[in-house]
Amino acid sequence: MESWEEPYMQKLASIAASNGGRVLEVGFGLGISASFVQQHPIEEHMIIEANQEVFNRLQAFAKTAPYPVTPKLGLWEDVVSTLPDGSCDGILYDTYPLSEDDLHIHQFDFVRQAYRLMKPNGVLTYCNLTSWGNLKAQYPEDQILFEKTQVPHLKEAGFSNLRIEIFNVSPLAACQYYQALTILAPIVKK
Image (tube, rainbow, N blue to C red; front, side, top):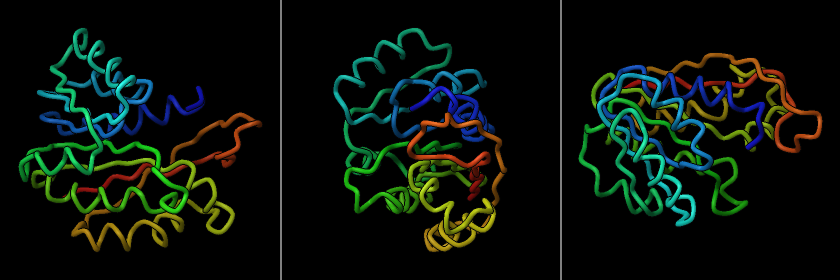
């Protein structure tokens, strides 16, 4: 993650926390989006993290967070099966694919699970900067990129209330995974 991504992470956090209630975040990383989620009045902030070292930082974060944090260690594939249907008001998914083959599609396996986890009117947002950065050559318009590469998968998962906000970004000239000046912020409601 690079510093230019922080305002974008703040946007995604505000989308995920827009309903208050229970927010599920998949991927803790540096804790940047988690810190932004904690700026909203929520009841609980569940965070799934697979890396043990990062999970240790998550546990420290949980001790000082303004709102209750429930850390969950493991791959999301293993953890979400333990969560009840309709238990989340908001979800933020921001992980990195486990293999290069999954670069453009890793979020869609999770999206199918997210539909099950969300309450009615729940909101999902997610990020796949590396994929979207690569796809910008083929789909330079964010709305078209979303419609062609994301919407079919979201609809297949059951979602029908789909939109994006176009968000301005300023990636560093040396950034190897994203060079466009805008990025999409998905707002996917159940």
